[in-house]
Length: 258
Image 1 (cartoon, rainbow, N blue to C red):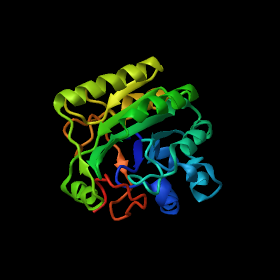
Image 2 (cartoon, rainbow, N blue to C red; image 1 turned 120 degrees about the vertical axis):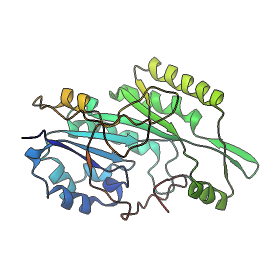
Image 3 (cartoon, rainbow, N blue to C red; image 1 turned 135 degrees about the vertical axis):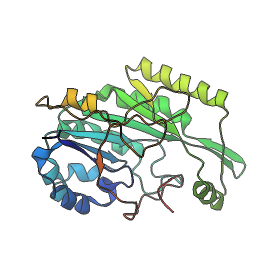
Image 4 (cartoon, one colour; image 1 turned 180 degrees about the vertical axis):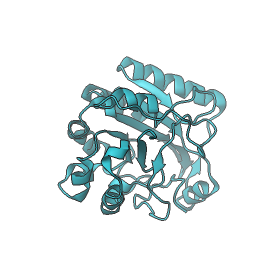
């Protein structure tokens, strides 16, 4: 008999924030005893906290690991449908209570966005010290970061709004990475770079960590996932989201939206 699977919902779209009923329906097709961990990815976690079909089915899984994205840009032009970061930070204690451990929540400061246009330069990079100062005291001890990928469709979408993506040089990115790491360390938080060349390979889905955190000590697969980017170290999982479920957050930098 094989090891129990890891479900991911989802790298492809924010099912928690935009499709809670579809997510709940898909989760019902799995026997919870066959699932080692359910990994959730969201920028808008409200549907985890409100009473309803999603919260009901989530409560049946033995382990939930949450990737919570807070970039500081919520409610602004670049993330128009995302709640302001203050609101999401306020929800963190309740999310931790639901998943039963702060170690099962990781913060994603992802992506780092720097643009120029309209006679100004904008970046969320300088928001990191503000955010880590608010998030670390709540018990979260890991953060994952990456920079915006310059996909042609992203560049076109930004250009339509009068923005041009500023590509950092290798040296500039290294300096930013060092500043982020120092600030995170100062707050007792480990920093991981998600599929970024020049940095150690990290695992957003980490079979070893999920085994360690599991309340029953169940072993999880540590086989490397297929089909991920070259610098991705994630272990295998089954993603139950599809790009056809188009995320409604309308983030200008999104790689998944056409």
